[in-house]
Image 1 (cartoon, rainbow, N blue to C red):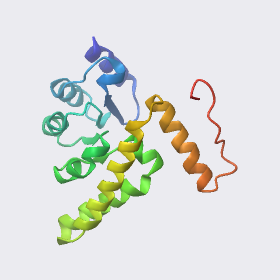
Image 2 (cartoon, helix red, strand yellow):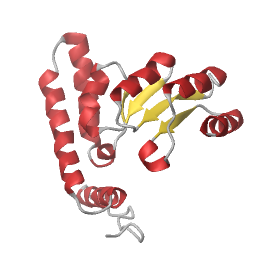
Image 3 (cartoon, one colour):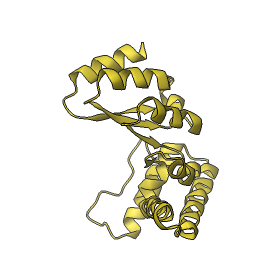
Length: 173
């Protein structure tokens, strides 16, 4: 099934790539064991995995089965814990609209690890991500549509007038 399909794709890849575990939207799960087998079979191709399952223990298991691979998590609420637990970072919906919050969080956690400082900055960045996530989650608009509209708003506010900022169907409420 899924593992055979991924192996066939990886066999044809010439560049390093990331696997993407997002059971909510795909209906399929990449298990840590499956990831480990694929990473060992294609060590020059599998650069890592993005895990959007919501299971932080599962994300840590991905790192454990293939320590050389990068593990990114798609969970705004866990972004600080992801870094504190030794994973490589987060790629989330928020980073599309608030990239400075994730970049700042990463810098602050690294600063804290190196010097003991930065905890207040990390906490402030995490709070900003949590506030964004709460507002985003409260929307009655479908998740991807709300995200696209937030990106349009951010680009317009930042003065990107030459960038197409209109959402088109089907991504209009």
